[in-house]
Length: 301
Length: 282
Image (cartoon, rainbow over all chains, first blue to last red; front, side):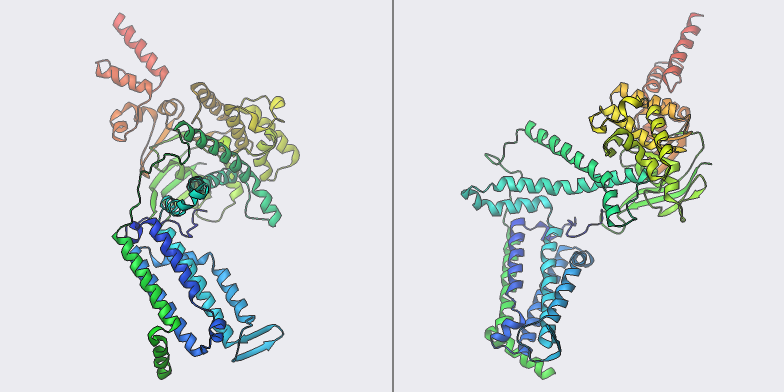
């Protein structure tokens, strides 16, 4: 249970860690938007871009993103292994999507290798499978880098601040944020509690690892019942503690740590805009860069 | 038969920034019939140490033998856990079943015993912890008082008829009377389960009940002492940043006033004071 490493905060000091949580959130959103701006095979073919040209453009775009991510990871001082581990959680999804894309590609296809019923394998299908896998890969890496370098508290604070405008239309932003931070805060506690109760029941020879799925599910009852009861107890105690410290919600509440958008965040903004521009330059052939690259590629081949 | 621990080491989250050495080079023997105390500050590795004894933590470094079972090799987990009964801190939080009797039967049931034997053991255990079997067996464990819940949880472990009972702070969170009741109960249990290992922060309890005491500090074993050795020498206690039991502390203060008094428990202190008084009158 303890080894859930998907995006668990990695405590080191780095420029990325010190960035404003709000800035990081915006950058990650921009990054995700950017990933979705990279067109699919089919849409490019429909726009009249040849398959070879498309390959060069997309390769260049992903290469730029990869380079950017490598630099960010190095700056963040989080080991690459840790970052890559977050892929482990979604590897099944990535592979499944790629395989489905490969087998059921239904767009324009000129180089068909195999066709039978609804299944068809084509060069275009392979290309779209590869680009989809790449997109998912980068899609997971970005946000997990965010959670690796930002504490849950900073994150919820950042989200609260970004959502603040919504409070003018009576959305209880502060309450949502406090619920989120309590939930996040309690995850490790609950994991610890689960460990403890599991151990206590194991000491009474409870068997969690054998039998069919129903038997295993039933074996969890001695853990889940005490866990549920202690969660309610904890919630009660927390409520009393907050009450006795006069917590009354958002009204008139000031913050201990005021977020500041600093020079670091400004640099980040410039970088993300630059990456945006470079990627779009490759994809949409600004200044004929992509065409030039394509010619170079053709020359090499 | 006994517990032999050699060069035991353990590390949490190895190879990560969260890495923490919990135990380092622990070597000691716990004999049959010992009332063995384990003391040390929070985070000194006490709980990690005892979790090794019934295989809840997999042995990674060193060796542990419990009644001839080598924990480094392949062994029968069920058998080990039926030999070593483990009562964790706040054991009442592990209660889950609808009735007290069913909850206490959980352990024996997992051991694969027959229906009649399970019932007999549950009844024996509930009586052993000083509860009225007929009155309490069909009640929900969640409607009992805190002290009763703890007894029921203890009965749940005792129903497995362990040969070694491990208690992690059995008196935590109880009032003075509840504390004493639980400890007297443990003393009674000792007739059936001869070897008892107890973690405690309360030096008075340790001094009063244990015959041998292991002192842990930051994952290392500072030594195994008898109560007289440990609490007769305030230099060790002070060096380890621990507290003397109240009687020993009183004796220590009196000694500084020039009285020749050595005591580790209440009876000893009373006897010493009476002796001095007698000598003065004579």
